[in-house]
Length: 500
Image (cartoon, rainbow, N blue to C red; front, side, top):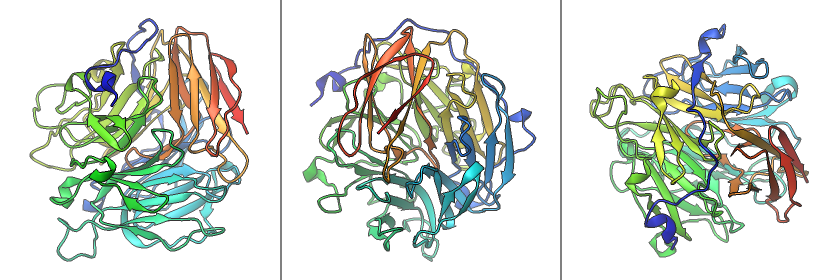
């Protein structure tokens, strides 16, 4: 058992403090608006995919629209300047979320698009063009709200799809959770999906290998609002046999209104913590070894169970969660999108998004108000990503019934930074499942490359590291199929590419 984390707050070495982060919403500068809209099938979902689809080193955005068409926004920002996008409607409706990944190994990112309706795999082409994928994929008419992928060989990835409420069940929606699906590769495409049962209305899924075992597991975060009773959070093993983990495996079943998953090693011990968003308490969990997880102490400051702006004391509703060092001080921070499902009377209506700054003692401090991101819309999905190539992480926020937010990071006196991009030959071109090991003079960082988690979307961009006052770091890559790269000394302020 990892007593140093369980019995108290882990002390982190860190560089000197920097100025408090600030953001400016550049959405009003755009010549378009984008709103995630719709009725009850779009109370949940509403994510964004952030990825470079035209090879200009600027992340573009594919934004779910619900009953409105999804939007593809091409990034035309200048380095360090205001965020600028040109947008076009995709004509695809019913979209709840989208995740970028290179499915066919051609080096161009594709899209897995989840919908209230048949899901889509879109093949990426030149200059942000997309077309229906030619691969076999049995897309059924379900209400899909979660997605994740991993590679178990050198071909196509294994996909998992989380399906919410079974809309065909006349006794629904309560206690009418649908079955989830596992798609295994079959040549240039996919075999018929294997059902993952029981399903408990998932809103986030993540393939991850937090213990570096060499075999990823599937974490499923479920919405208690619809399973009502009998359900719980789930973990599945893929090999040697597909099965749900139980107490005999060390898995501690627990229940929450699961909305999003974020995984990150916060203390440099090579084992990832996991953040789970919910209605009420948001849960940061620590791994105790094997399949065991426990809640972090309340004093860690991540529970964020009520609005911090005052005036509404009802419980918060958390959706997308994502770690990222927004002030580049060498410590991970945490963004969480918040917002009432619709008009739920027992939950806060004025529910600002959170920005929690990592502190030297391992705790987190709320700075959403001073940072300028404490908006009161019904936020859903998000992406924490450097949109204008200035080394500062910006924040895209998707809102239900309100325009998207493009929060540009304007922090002054931020620390140094480094970003690492992975490329390899074979089917898994983006090295999903790899671990980046990065060292500065006072600590080690571990970062796993995954597809999934969050709420309604994900990103495929270089991995960003804040370095504080350090002007360089050294890094190596633990490749997913085995083997470790040589250490490389890397000056700060660049995107470094590791090839295999």
